[in-house]
Image (cartoon, rainbow, N blue to C red):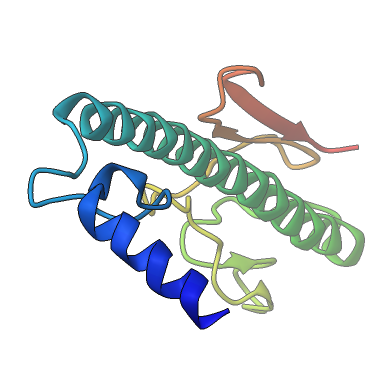
Length: 149
């Protein structure tokens, strides 16, 4: 057995091309420019897909937050209507049901997650209103509106 190992070593020393795969033959071995270029290109494509996916996820989450915010405001408006018979005139900072009582139904009105702006509220009469926000996702309608039920 020892004799076979010695013979194998002497063959490998005399003929370096017989080295097993994965071992460097000399100082000139390594990756070619084309191999590196292909690898970097594949990584760049994967990063581009990941970035696009991440940004669309953020847009969807902001749109979902807008819709949830409008439902929260709608709930506060309906509490005002059921308790006082009319909707508030303004919801800029908070939803205050009456001017005389100063009953606050919603302490702070939710703001748009991207612009931090106020959602659009218009009281058409004392018993009707519209509440709307602009959505970012192109598949949804641009404006999302709620009105009194």
